[in-house]
Amino acid sequence: MASILIVDDDDSIRTLLRHILEEDGHQIREATNGHAGLTLYREQPADLVITDILMPERDGMEVTLALTREFLDARVIAMTGATGDQNFLNVAKLFGARRVIQKPFSPADLLRAVRFTLSH
Image 1: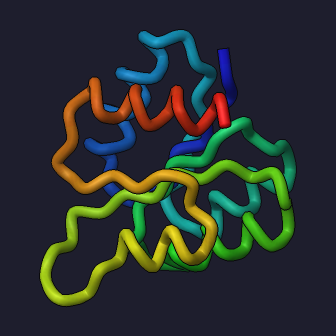
Image 2: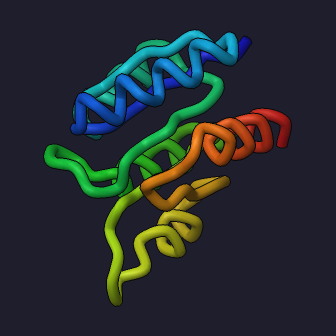
Image 3: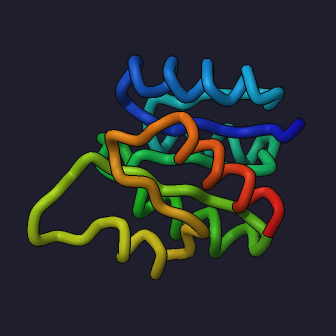
């Protein structure tokens, strides 16, 4: 069982992630924005952070960069539903995300990314 911090401003996405991950045996904490997520992680680091990229009050790019600079062993999965010319997921990888997920995703895709990230 791993401790996982979910950072997303969308209540329904946080609820979905919590449900999938708790069923897989993980301990979940949640934050509604990047600022709150960083505060929670600094108070008690998690084994994994799953963050949305587009959010108010410090977006997922800022969260990813701050975590990977401040905590060298931080494991981050970045996700987004944004599409178009801006390739947010590639930038998130450059900022230190170990895995990226495009929304919408299946529970199997999420669990595969979580298990890989926790084991590497």
